[in-house]
Image 1 (tube, rainbow, N blue to C red):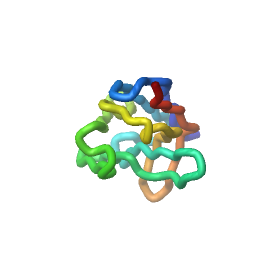
Image 2: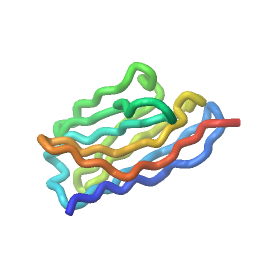
Image 3: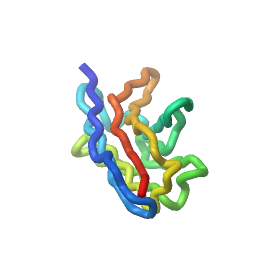
Length: 114
């Protein structure tokens, strides 16, 4: 059974930082492309950042220079370091594992507000 469990969301002031983490089980983690997506109320779910099995990263233009995705294949985890957070970053953030099949976590809420 595949499980992706996100943690690290919360409420933060504009300009602050948060670190999201996703723990994966039930898959051969090292061969999967991992990603973080987000969905704000009334909007579609969009890619935030992804990292291939080889470590190549990709970012949405809106987060380039502020967010960093990383993975630890020994611990089966993927993290998203979010700096200089803005109110428009407020959303539910989902972890994704992608290799032919797609798996999703249940999401973690990130709220950026003063």
